[in-house]
Length: 453
RNA sequence: GGCGACGUGGCCAAGUGGUUAAGGCGGAGGUUUGCAAAACCUCUAUUCCCCGGUUCGAAUCCGGGCGUCGCCUCCA
Image 1: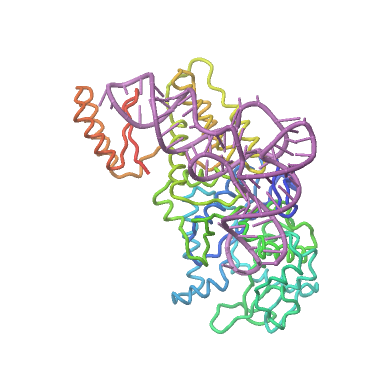
Image 2: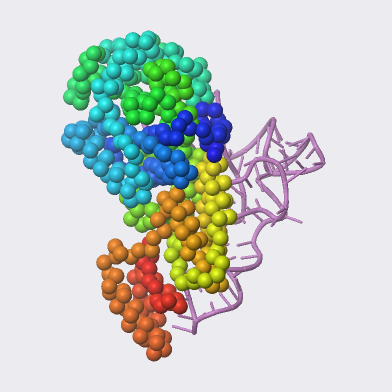
C-alpha cells in the first residue's frame, strides 16, 4: 500500500509502527454549521479509515474539537450566549451532519477546553526547554528553535517573512513566532495558568491531544490542504520540540479543497453550502460518490449538475446490488477480478476514482448475469462489501416516506387495471405518480416503486 | 513578490513513457416492454491547452508560452 506524504512530497510505502494504526484528523472549530468542504474532507478520511480496516489494520481514530478560540468567542458574543454553550450546539450539529453522511464515529473526540491542564503542562515544558517564552501573559513558540521549521509546507523562513502580511508584534522575538497561550482580554473565557488567566492558542491543542490519545508518533495525520500552513507546520514544531521524537507523523495526508463556482468556498468569502442543505436534496451516497469520483488530493469543483449525475450513478449501483433474479443453480458470477481491481486502486494512495469505476463495471456484469440466468448473489455481496468500504449504503428504502401505504394501494389497483389491459387508466396513475416524484417500474417480479431524490 | 498545483470527449473525471486513452452523467441508434421505466448492446476524444525538444516511442519526461486555481492571513 502506498500513501502520498505531504512532507516528503511523494508516495511512500505504508508501514505503520504497529498493528494499530494511529490516525488523527483535524476536526472543526465549532462556531458555525458544517459546509460541504467539511463533508468532502471527512468523507475522504472516513474512507481512508474504512479501507485500512478492510485491509485488516486496527485503526485508532482521533478527531478533535477546537472548542475555544477567537471566532467562537466573537460569534458567541454576537449572539449573547456563552462560548461553551454555542460550541456545544455546533458540536451536536456536527454529529448529526456526519451521521447523515454515514461517517463512522471516531474512537475519541477530545475537546480543547477539556484538556487545558495538559496544554498548560506542555506549554510550560516548552518554556523550560527553551522553545517558548512568555510575554505579557502570552506565550510564544520560538520558531527558530524548531527542527527545520517549514519542512512540511516546503518554505523557507526568509521567503515567508518577505511576503508576510502578519501584523508584527514588535515585542515578539521573531515575527513568525506563534502563540501557544493567549492572555485573556476582559470578558473572555479564561483558565488560570502560570502566566495569568488566558486560553490555549490555536495549534497547541492538536499537539497535546494527539500525543495524549495516540502517543508521541502518529501514523497518519490528516486534514485539508489549507491546514498545511500554518497549522500543521506549527504542530510539527511544537510536538517534536516537546517530545524530542522525530518524526511526529509518518504520513501527512491533505485533501484538495472544494471549489465553488471557480472560487474557493470559504468562511471569509461567505459562499458556503451547508451539509444540511445538501442532504435535503441529495443522498449521502451521491455526495460520497461525487467526492470519491475524483482524486482526494485534487481540488474538486462542486456543482449541482455534478451531484445530480452522481445521484443517478448511486441509483445504478443500488439497483445492481439489490436485484433479485432468484437463480441459485449453475456457476455463479465471479466478482473477484473486480475486487482485485478495487484493491489495487485503493492501495495506490486511495485512488477511489478507479475503485468506483470497478464497482460500476461489476454492476454492469451483475445486471448482465442476472438477465442471463447466472447466480449473482455472491457478486452482489462483493459489491455491497466494497461499497461499504467507501461508505456507500446502496439501500433501496422508502421506509421513511409516510405515503408508502397509499402508493402501495395505487400500485395494487393499477396492477388490476393492467391485468384487465386498461392501459389508459394505468398509465394515468403512473404518470401522475411520476409527477409526484414516485417512479414505477413494471418488472417480471411485479411493479416496483421508488421515491426520486 | 515567494511557494505550489492543475489544464484529458458536451459536462465531471482516472490514467503520468509503449496493448483498443478507465468510469460516471448526458446524447444518438437498437434489443426488451402493451407503452414506459430499468437493464443490456452499439456509437459518441486517431487524441490529451499551444509551441519546441529528448526518445525507436510522450497525454505521460524537459524547456518556453498561454490559461485556471490554491497557499503565504481565520479556514476541512
